Length: 212
Image 1 (cartoon, rainbow, N blue to C red):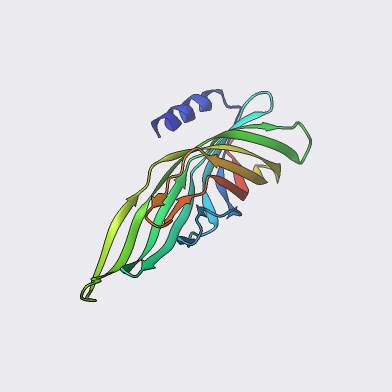
Image 2 (image 1 turned 120 degrees about the vertical axis):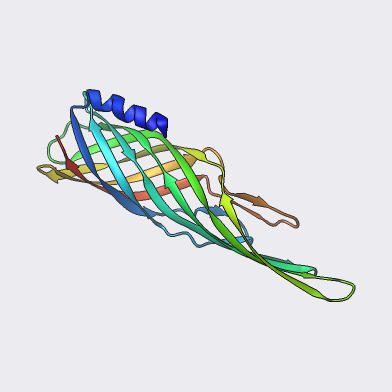
């Protein structure tokens, strides 16, 4: 985050314009890759603040802080017992995007590319039953653990159109993110396992107010 702050200060010195606003939308792809091991309970919405700097030659720099509510439910069992768990976590993405706007009047198409650091943390509640195969006795246990998953970085490309009136701007866009690693990576015996998806597509809309 220190590098984002330095970039923010450096860019503001050269910016021809500056806008603040909010960006929100929906994720259209699944966030987990698994067969039978886990079911995603993540919310598909995404929302957060944004800032945009206008640069020379039709370029711009956009920085977002996007929040997602992440979660899953998982279950596994056999003759020796069963295990169920439910996770709830907060996901924050911080896309830093270089944009190019075509010099057209009124409606301005644009393309964008950059990177997106991500943090993902929360907790998991679990319940398990162990069966003693000799006596048939069952042992129940319950627990909670923090799920401080590994940070990851995504490579982002996208495009959209911007239109507006006066200082108010509206910009619908389509954005693709390729995560370079799987933050969530759970594996076990007998094929049990699931991971966070590395491909992500979002449909977003930005609403901005041009400060100067």
